[in-house]
Image 1 (cartoon, rainbow, N blue to C red):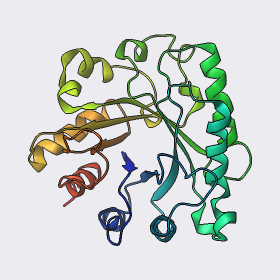
Image 2: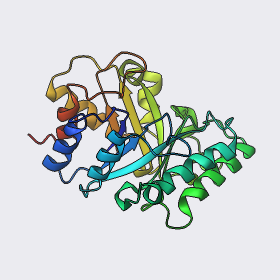
Image 3: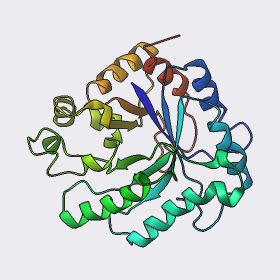
Length: 259
């Protein structure tokens, strides 16, 4: 099991240390982290000096993959704007004269969940911009629709009626912990037959849980997806802007409950 981390923490000195510490302490846990300096890449320019200093540090850990954040506004954003943001991430190393600023792929946020052919074409062109060539080290693509309906996940026609074949990972559920526990979601999210290595679950607003219960939560998420992130932050728009008190325990739980 691995961690998909929305790293929307502003990188003042020491701010990303919890990630570095976790990556060092748990070398068998893979982290795919999303950097988001300007609600995107700071189109046409470089991010500020704090990002220029910290992003290269991510490269020093073999178990950290770095993705750039691009929102598609559910495929309503002009495709040329999306492609321009992808280009900006790809050009960071040249613009800064620093190869360590090269990111490994793109995290497409706010992707559609209901299938429509023109949206498939839109996302296909965006994915191709990442997958073709050598501009991104892993050419890795993540889609985040926020929710893929449990009914669709369990449909026999899921691959023909979704965008799953355009991404390496799709976030099938990004919601509160309470909604995850709801029977209509919980059972169906664990009964699908899709390869779990292609799926992620993100949960926020967790209650105060003991480490043993957190271990159990991680085990249950693993029945639905191989990638996860959980946080006990409950304030909207702040879920991913800091490392919550349970971050270190979450990583331990992913690492088989290691202490």
